[in-house]
Image (cartoon, rainbow, N blue to C red):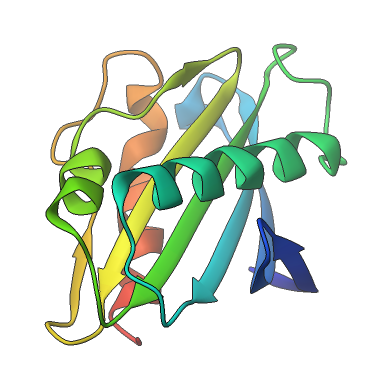
Length: 146
């Protein structure tokens, strides 16, 4: 994972990392993954993480430097928002299936720093299922260090 730098998403300063991977096991596709990490003192509610995640995906698509989406290429956006105050609506939202997008993955994650718990998807969706072992490992590696 390469470090891109600091950006502001929805008024929240966050660090951005980037990874470009090609695997034959992904049906010979390239996955360009952006990881956004941010902290807030505010309570994270569903609308907070939903807007943050959506804006992170927009940033990832706009700044994607790989092959065009859909031509053996996809973009992944992992948005990790950390707080001591996490509303149940936010954790419930993150544990559901991710929203569907054309050749792009939007993965919202809320990290409750008081409990050291990362709330993320429980099941892998059928569409794009081949990428989820990679996403799961990457998310676990990152959140285990928070």
